[in-house]
Image (cartoon, rainbow, N blue to C red; front, top):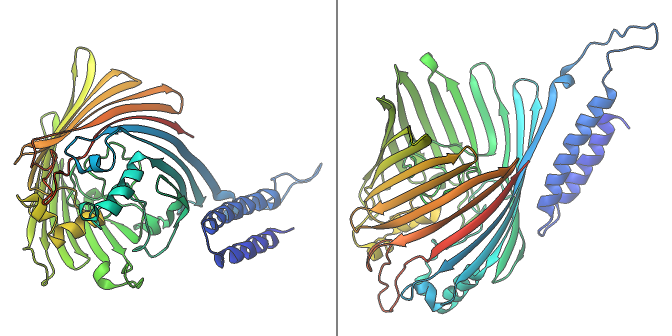
Length: 473
């Protein structure tokens, strides 16, 4: 069968999948796309000339564009286990006073199809099983203490595509103890013309210079407590980068979003943003302007050097919608990092200050502020107060074994979270990570536990200890 014939058969199968419902059409569509790529590449390999004729003959066929088609595969498998202990005053103890044992299995398959020197198509699929006592406890709290679990700020949630242009997430199985879902996290076509770069589809873009807190990163930022930052959640968007003078660039993006209540794409749910990146000697400068949901965000950032250390600073000014109950506010982050050698060991560390102008001193009142709750629910804001200090130190005890000590402190309380961990690359493509999340602070503080009116409980998060095994291919 010719390449066009085989392609027609596969496209017909894809058409059949589009009309089906349930958990597995998503996987079928992904597999159909992979099969289509394989058949196209196989057809190209089978039908293009080898460059040799028969005995005593010379081929006069020249190589065509198909010779520049290539594909790349990769991915990982991760096994995670954790145990958490709730304080007797924590509202988690209302559901279960015993240790909360949880598990997680994550598989990810990445494919890149290169079409010549300018075009590429990236597809990244992931499937995740997660379950254990925390999920069961969350269900019990929601049922018995619904006032303690805020509607827009739930723990252990499943990524959903309610606001995305494409719905590429599907739940395969779910009950009160476990959930198994799969999703396409990257589905993006990119082209690299002489003037820069253009990408459209589900992708990830990171702006800003924060190490832990990043007010300039408006689109699916990492949480400050995330110790694993390999992949951001993909966002449906169009992104362009234009080359500028002296190595700088202008980045533009458009993020259309659906209103979760209506399912319609709406302007007041979407984002349109631009960022200019400039160089002046060894100093870098960022200028940001964005229409983000109903707000306007303006920002400026810079990177420079102070001796053997690097400094970074970002400042944003958010102009809220006229109907917002809060005032326009300033956010800022500044950090300093450097590496050094002590006792014949490599060290690296940083210190960072963060200010959130939207934060409040009364934390329970902050959880009643619709502007704060909205940003907590959207994954843009992660703290309730105003001023924070973050620090991290990394020690390379062996080229294959590193230890990290991270800390985030609310300077007003004070309270915070301490995160020690070890990372051991014990074999080729294998990695073992172990560590803890330890919360500290007196009662009534943000991390020590906010008193919940009308109950004997606080919002203190349980301390947890974890062990992860990662395999990369």
